[in-house]
Image (cartoon, helix red, strand yellow):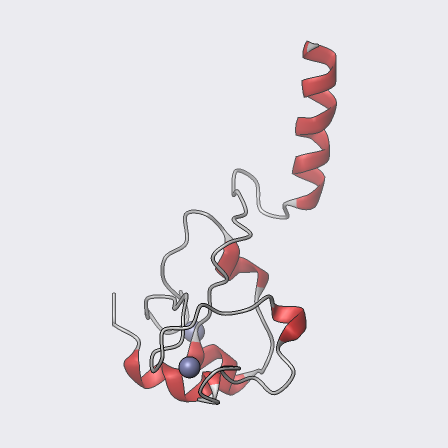
Length: 99
Ligand SMILES: [Zn+2]
Ligand SMILES: [Zn+2]
């Protein structure tokens, strides 16, 4: 049993680049200001301990600032906007709180 757990932990570490960081698949987090500069999801937003963007000092968003629809998985981000109200992710930066 302990052997089995050991293997799983090792595998887990392989998937996590920075040591000691744990990933949280949900909720999907987003920094609108980063997205405005480079329209792609950043994996570091999903680190469990991370609640703000280090580059902008903004609290990360987990849902649309307009209609409060939670973000869908990044592979579904076709246009980079809220699928419900079409607010672009980049514009959500205006509503992000400074930490
Ligand atoms: Zn940012
Ligand atoms: Zn929306």
